[in-house]
Image (cartoon, rainbow, N blue to C red; front, top):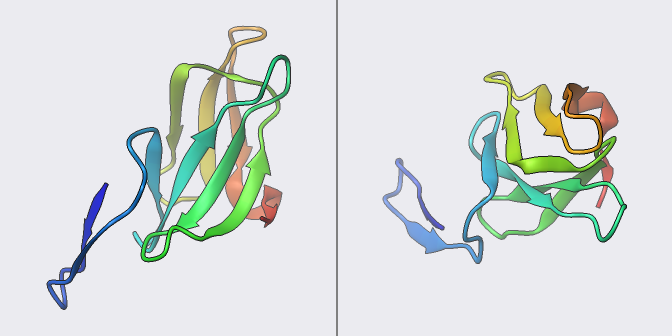
Length: 99
């Protein structure tokens, strides 16, 4: 993934291929990390400049076919849960912890 700073024109490459969603102001992004076996998936908030993990959120289940999205204000994530085929919404702001 290439990132462009619109103010300075600086560009840099992050070692992320796909499966990310921009968070809030665009200074960070969420990456979906699949759980192994029956373990739930995890979302990891990464700094857009350094790709350093900032926070993580263990989801209540596994995401079906990578179908997940963050809300425009960056406060929520909704995903299609594999286990019961239901759409689940989780608040990102209150449910995150240090990575």
